Image (cartoon, rainbow, N blue to C red; front, side):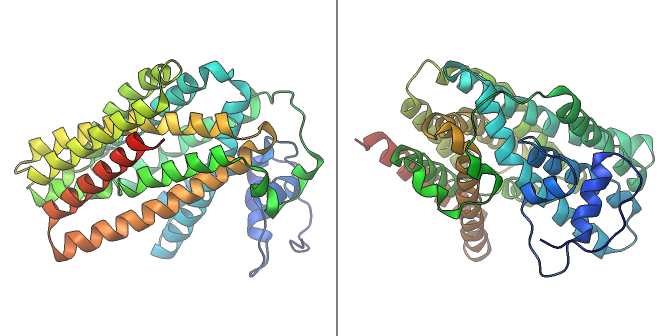
Length: 356
């Protein structure tokens, strides 16, 4: 596809090449992440993964440099695009390099490490805000450091496994989903069902604020959730390599029901933190296992496609669940919102438990 007539610049790092490639795409044109990788001179299967992380890293300096809301919004959009690009290739890479008997532990460990970052990040932000007298721009610069390190690790520390890949991998084949087995689509349905039973974590913060938690300390709600998520994910993943997936998933939904009931009945910020901790336990029990099931049911040559479809279905389900939760919160009340979530989670658990 055409990307303009810009003169090829002097040699520089691949992050800058990715950024210039994205900026050179004409308005109204669409490029896949594989095309961006090839045009930016980042060939091979790792290209899309590097593009995804590079986009995230390159947007971080935009936030402290921004003088208008427009730049903040644009940077956030590009950052989310980067997240969408890197998610499926990252999970496909992990599935490729991990023995099938250890995939549960591997995906659990990935979720755990990811949640450690979500736990440490808000705490560091609070500490840095105190150290720099609430200078938001200075604090935002620190977010560029881990983003740059992530790109460096992927570029210099990750070696692609030797696997046979179909020649069609170089082009988009929209009919590839037809080659995915029925067992895979059952997993996609289960994942969407789980997401419908669990709306956005933003409602946890709203519940804390509604019960008197000061806005300054609102990030601690996500800190608690991420801490429990990180602590539970790896043991749960290890457990999933040795136990029935159905039993673990039903247990996870049971914990979500309990979390929703606690949050519905909460009359103080303390109970919000208890409900949030249970919410994190539910995430730890289920998210790594669902990724393992995707990897176990998808053909090796279609792992990227499989994770992409799974993430798409889960994203649409989360949007729908959050929209419904927001409407119930607005027109009925916060407690009713979490009671509805408990009811849906209970129905999902019964459907999964009774499924032949």
